[in-house]
Length: 194
Length: 194
DNA sequence: TGTACATCAGTGAACGCGCGTTCACTGATGTAC
DNA sequence: TGTACATCAGTGAACGCGCGTTCACTGATGTAC
Image (cartoon, rainbow over all chains, first blue to last red; front, side):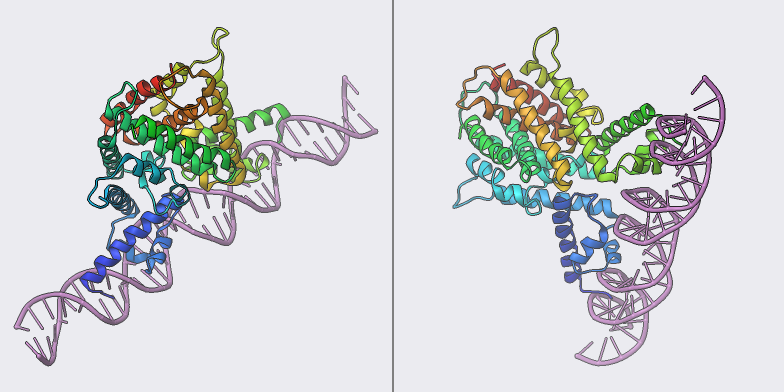
């Protein structure tokens, strides 16, 4: 049956958030429409009143995940802009490694992106650019012959790759997983002139 | 019909290589038994004479991909062991970015690994450890306060993450993609004491 | 070496299942009077 | 403000499809004599 405009907008937002959480946790191919709708408290048919198909939900869910991740990450604390230390502590924590669902959409879906449609890939690029741009101004001086932009690109690559490797090895080789997080925490801090 | 032992072993090897190539290119969930067998010149039922199920083919294909990648990467040239430059040139090339199928299984499947079974994850960990161990002895001196092991971990994380981001952005934001490859080439060379 | 037969890798139809998507229907919402 | 009706978000059965897997069958291979 019909619902109020407000309720409909709420439901749409719930679908996007639920889908994003599930896609990050189990991969885009690994989650079906039926489960997303069920977790959002709907039957599967309802989805098509909000999105023309699964792919467009994928695109919106990624965009929303990147947007809210970016906002959370760059939020000012006590009026101060975020520091490099805060980015590094956040990305290289156990909570980041062990909670796919609640964290960075770039890290969660990086190797699935190339197989998605153009809109989705576009959102991914914007998200990556914004992360680099957010890190760049937090950099201090370091004994390295490289521009701030180059160092920001390195830090983003290492964070995304490091978290992915730490996740993939956390059960079978926890030593490697821990070592990856702590080595990156130390050496990226130094490279970033923390 | 039955085939000779030699032919059967050939077929098994073909299945593993074909599956690995397709999994790297389109993801593990993105490729079915039928297509793997078809590309290997068989009908789908034949697979089950060689593997009990898809998951065990996934595990063997990953192990084989990591093994042959490792051999290719660490092969001596003119009696000399591989250098850091060779690793960096290989990982940060367009051929690496654009040919998922023929390259590093770690880079291709890093964010799918956490969802695979224990055997598959174990193979992944071994592959990652071997890559770190291969890079460590190639490092020279650099103005960075970090052990060789820590620098090797950083380089591996940055290569895997950097290639993944370069892949995800190559169509919609080629500028970012190129910049990522060249920035990493330069800065990792410096950090590695190339 | 030649013959008879057991083995078993490969075939292809068939299985149940879950996928994304469609659609006739329902009934509360929002609107026109 | 009250009434009549059009709208349309949500329901749930049904669609075709491709998935992983099974299995009776085939026929060349490998073996026992």
